[in-house]
Length: 111
Image (cartoon, rainbow, N blue to C red; front, side, top):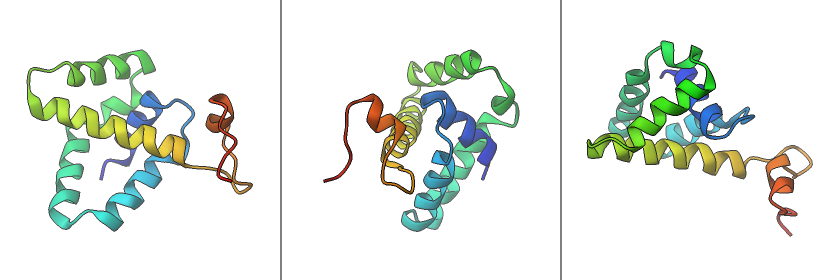
């Protein structure tokens, strides 16, 4: 899979999201069947190698274009990528069971 594209996508939706792309890939390996994994791989390949080296504002514009596309599959892909990036960005925590994102939104963490 195009890990660099996924890392750039995750960084665009959730800046400072180290480890998120790896978490998304790990979850996809565990929970998606071979056909769905192939679809994810093809989706990430559509972004190409150049996407990862674009400045953040250009990456954001490219992703917004997918979200605003007339093509339903592009909009669906945008939503899936955004949900995956943001879900894992807010789900991940450090070894002390805290997260800077949690602190930023006033969440104290699990009880």
